[in-house]
Length: 433
Image (tube, rainbow, N blue to C red):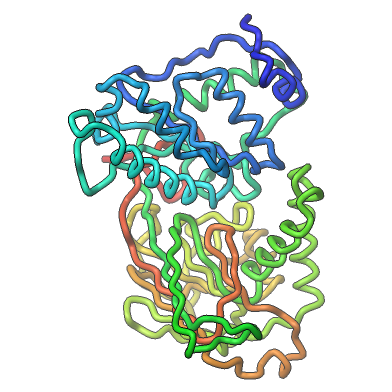
């Protein structure tokens, strides 16, 4: 046995129930670099403990401490201390391609990728040119997932399971084997690809009173999307309300994952029972590959899917089911690396519960390579007409916002990311041929 250093003994003991750590059963490769990017706030701050545990157990891993003000600087210092062969592997697209283990929820991967790109730009600016190949295109490491967050939809599809959680009843050896197995699979597991999409939002700036003011110019924002996007009065509005509640009460929602899930379920039931949800088609225009899609009046939310697992494991598309006569008939089988997005519409809470019980799927609307959503310049009054207080919101991989009147949202394919598959079954994904 090796005694855990004092800096992490208390955390490890509290979370894992022990204060000694055996040597890991796998070793990090000497010819390439393994990055570990874990969101410390994920899993009711369980991610912070896991990150510290990995640091002590695998000291050669380069830590991208997401949320830390010195995240990039610390990673640069660690890489500068490595030998030239390891540094050169940052540009390797073959067997020595770097690995990045990302721990958190669905939004953590995009955050980790953004931090990695900042790290590479900083490293390239600091290192001597003979140690690092100059290139305009940064090589992205092969990505493995550690599902610590509330929503772990992409991890489900890629075979990493629905949650990497502490089990107080498991033995010390069992917990260590679980973590070592995760690291070993991240390094040497089978690989495939994942489509990355860029979501661009642009609209008039907001005046002091909260209304759009074209005279103040336009605001443009870019976000990565890897899993899904939704816009409307149902799941995206629930996500936005939950985020607002969580941000206002960090002490309540930062302690236990079960509290987060319970609050999410409560908000969903409350919205389904108390709110009259108006038709989303009165508030936006949807175009797929340049063609306007006619939205049925019963739809209250539109979902755009790259990953076909959302809302805690729901397949809104209904991959194994046939289309109804009123739905899209011709389409390619969905896949995480086909360069296509699937678009569906959901009617309300009862419809969503039917999807969860696998009695129905959402209404298949379209499949395409590019999507454009244009918000109405003025609310048409349907909220008061339907006696509703519902808020129209949008979300990308669990990160929500409220679109402004006249806002334009576009989705375009950017690249394919190399991913590592876990040991569980895959969903709409597969190894490289």
